[in-house]
Image 1 (cartoon, rainbow, N blue to C red):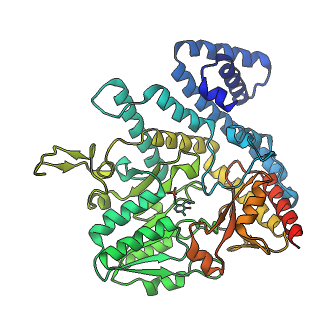
Image 2 (spheres, helix red, strand yellow):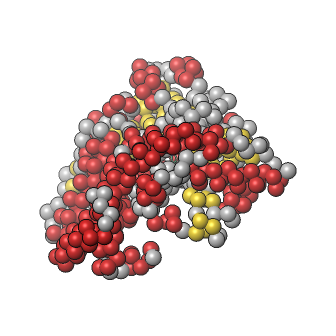
Image 3 (cartoon, helix red, strand yellow):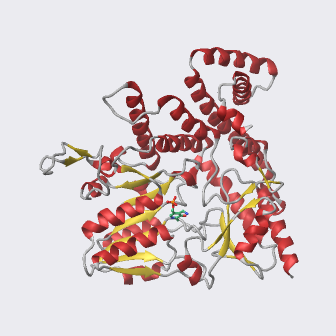
Length: 498
Ligand code: PMP
């Protein structure tokens, strides 16, 4: 089915039927007659402009999903008291899930239960279509004053930057640097800003709960500059020891970096408070937003940080695409990270007349990854069409449900606080007498996708007395039934080992 659609996207009947169903759902009209009329109109539209038609399809999917949220809200309200035995999967959630083709896969002869969204989310059709449309219709190396396709590609690329700037409430698109992901965004800061601003004797404050991508670049930058990395500890339950912050901060502190949300514990850290305290000490703040922005709205001006990094693939967008947001005056003072075409102009052999692009563009050398940002913009529109507040409310409900369900598994230790406040629906755990990787394998045989190992966070696991853990991570499409299935599987595993 998947191959049929994408190998031959212009099978008119497939698309007509799909669009007709989507449009009639949006309109709340399910009778075949009205769908038929829409279908005819779509058929006519298709005859004239296939690309436009495909774009409408993507938009229709998003709108349909948005309409479904209204329906879902009603159903969720009805189901609010059912939380200990599982919230029912509403028709609206079923419909949202239908936007994600891969969720229909069977794995090892079982329906897929995808609980690895903190590693990467699945993609809705709207995003897959945006990527396919780019390659089907707009692909060219961007150029603002060249041929039509080059101009189109350029316009799409910059439009996506504008979408991200709005999404983050940045002051403008010049503050949005495209990267390959959070990892590259953080490496860019460590290499460019760190290279220019860190000197012998300077200090950087990081936390025990850092992901490797946020820890190792700073270790390298500090070593290069002969600067010192100081570490903020966590409580036994993983909460940052903010009581230590003022002791660690001094006039030597140049930078404070921490995750907005821990990738292991799902805990949300208080960005504003840390920024205020770091700024009072004269340090800049880098926030690793890889696990936060996929789950709730982020306003970089309100947070008050200086850098914010995230990855498209953790919020329904494509892999290989990420964002570094930075305040424009800081970007202006930073040297290029990489050099090459597009960011360098009037280049001569003596580099006398060579000058660099300004703002975000200074950091983007070579042929850009145009479909990446285009896909991310489609993902943002899709998330917004679902209603970010609605998604967050539902996620909190799922978190409450999951935490109470996990309590029923004997010998299961959830890492971090087990209260539902201030956390996202990401749950790391160990099961007594079970090795983490063996458990992941056993669950995989039953169709579950979970992550296990050091979770690129060995220092935090070590602080909790562990070397490995298993992580179940949910997203907008995860159902309470899936969580219940996992709980039942863990109970079976536990019985098997006792
Ligand atoms: N930071 C955190 C908190 C993460 O969870 C991840 C991804 N697991 C990263 C950084 C790195 O992101 P990416 O691999 O997309 O660059």
